[in-house]
Image (cartoon, rainbow, N blue to C red):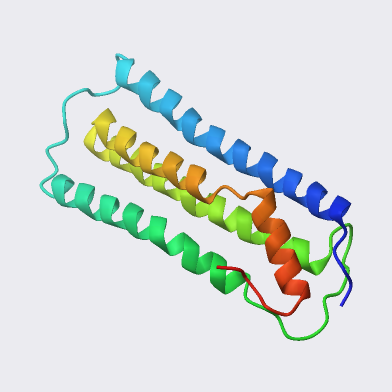
Length: 166
């Protein structure tokens, strides 16, 4: 198994951090959309009269909270030790590709919470629906944003045959 170099790990981490920041900024762009539409004269301001709107709020909130806890499980599954040889493909080793892929999937799950809020805003016309789910999304980003020290510990554990550190 080929050792992952410090330079490669830092370079891959930087790519993951940039992608994570861009996706986190996307959540804030949704906030701009919500604010703009809330104040737009052409956007209906009255609350939705959909009979299932309240139930949908709770369903989306439940999904958001489940995703918060699901992220750790997804990360553990994706980063469990692999059998066989790590093969260098392109500029990144297989180990760093797994870390990068796991980070991007984590970011997508974090952002999906804000997207649920945006959908709920369009259905209910209540900006507070978006604010709550946006806050959960940003908390997810903060909690699960990759730390370089975690990556380094994982690579050391992976190359030692131990797998994802707890």
